[in-house]
Amino acid sequence: MQTKFVVVLGSLMSGMGKGIVTSSILKIMELNGLKALPVKFDGYLNYDCGTMNPYRHGEVFVLDDGSEVDMDFGMYERFMNRSLTGKLSITGGKVFSSIIEKERRGDYLGEDVQMIPHTINNILERLRAISESEKPNVLVIEVGGTVGDIENSYFIEAMRQLSLLEKVVFVNLTYIPKIDVVGEQKTKPTQIAFRMLMSAGIKPDFIVARSAEPLERSAKRKISMFTSVTEDRVIDDSTSDTIYSVPIHFIEQGFDRLLLKDLGINASLSKKKFEAYKKRLSGKASPGPKIAIVGKYVELKDSYASVKEALVHSGLSLNVSPELHWIESADISEGNVAEALSGMDGVIVPGGFGSRGIEGMITAIRHARENSIPFLGLCLGMQTMAIEFARNVCDLKGANSSEFDHSAKHKVVYIMPSQKGAKKKGGTMRLGAWECVIPSKSSTAYKAYRSSRISERHRHRYEINNKYIKVFERKGLIPSGKSADGRLVEMLEWRNSFGIGTQAHPELKSRLESPAPLFVAFLSAAQKHSRNS
Image: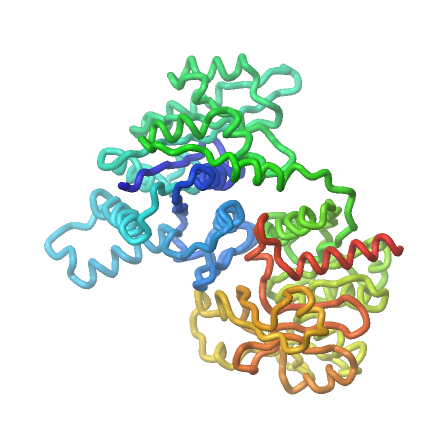
C-alpha cells in the first residue's frame, strides 16, 4: 500500500495540544491494524533540541539512537508503545544545513538556491525517504508552531505541495474560548484561523476544537457554517481526565471512520484492542502517596513531562493516583526543608544542568535519607545523592561535582574522560540507550527490573568518580548497577531504606502498557510509607 499522509496544524496559539492530537491519530491507526509513524517538523534553526533551555522549550527527549528531539516524541512513543528514531524529527536547522552543505559541494552548480524549490524539495525528499525505508501505511506529520508564524511557513508550503503529489488529509487544531461575562463559546478566532490557513492554499478536512468544556452544538454548527467543514468533521477536543482517553473520545465521535475514508484505506477497528485499551484506563484508582519532585525547572511542568507521565503509568499499574508536589530546589534550605517536605511519602530529584538549586537538592536528599522517605534520583539526582552521602556520611568535607566546583577537594562526581576533548556542546554527551549490568539479586535495582542486564537511555557528561566507590560501599552506599564494560557506575542505592539513584533517565521509556520499573518500585515504596506514616 502506498503511504498516505495526515498533516496536523495548529492555529491561534501554541500549547493547545497538537502533540496529543497527533499521538491520538497514531493510536487510532494502530487500533485499526495499520502501521503509522509520526514526523515532527520544528521551525527553529537549532539542529536539534540538545542545547535548548527547558524553561523555554520543555524537556529534551532522548531516543534510543541518541537523538535529542522535541518532547512531543515522548508523547508519540507513550501512545504508540514503541521506540522511534531521530530521522523522524525534521528541524529547520537540519533542512538548511543540508542545503548549504549541498550548495558548497556544488550540487546546485549554476542555480540560485531559493526557498522554492530547493527548501521545499529538501523537505519532500526527507518524507519520501522515510516512506520508502519504513513503508508505513500512514505518516502523521505534526507541523510545530502556529499557522502564520514565519518559522514554519515554508513547511506549510511543503505540505501544500505534498498534497498535489500524494493523498493528504489536513487536520487543523483551533481553540474555542468561553468568556465568563458572555457565557458562550466563541467561534470567531476559529473562523479567522480558517481563513489564514486557506490563504496558504490549504483547506482543512477536519477541525479539532480545543476547549475547556464540551463543544456546544451551536458552536459546532457555527464553525461548520463559516468554514464549509461539515458538522461531523468538527471534532470536540475538550479537556478530559487523562490525555490517554483522547483517542477513545475521537473514536466515539466517528473521527476514525471519516479519516480512514478520506485516506482511502479499508481498515476496521480491532474491538479486542480497543476494549483492552479502554479497560486499562477505566480502573478507579485510590488516592496515592504524596510525591515531592524537587527540581530546577518546576515553573514549567513540561520540563519534567516524562517524569510526570512515568508516575501516571506507575500509578495506573498499582491502581493508585499519586499526588504530585512540584518544589523549586533553589527554595529549599536547611531551615525550611522539614516544612517543605512535611507529609511527603516520596522524593524525586530529576535531571538538570548547572549549579543553581543544587544545594537545595542535596538538602532534600539528606532529609529523605535521614527520615527513611523513599527516594529516586534521576541522572543529576543520582549525582547529588552521591555528593550528599559523601559530605554527610563519609565526612568528605566540601565534596562536590567538578561541574559545580572545579576546585573541590573531593570531586566525587567528575567529567567523563571521553567528554574532556569535546569542543562542541550539541550532540556530544553520552546519549541514547546503554546497557547496565545489575550483579546482585538482593539489590533494589534487581528487584525492580527482575533482570541482571537492562538498557536505559542516557544524557550526561559527568559520572561518579570510581576513586570514591570503596568508601561509599563501606558506609552503605552501594553501586548496584554498572555499565557493560564495568567502568561507569549506573546505579547507587542506600543499604537500609528505599533510596536509589540512576545515571539513566528511565522515565523516557515509560509507557502506559509498560511502566518504568524503577518508578513502579519507587511508587510502591512510597505507598507503603504512606500507609505506615
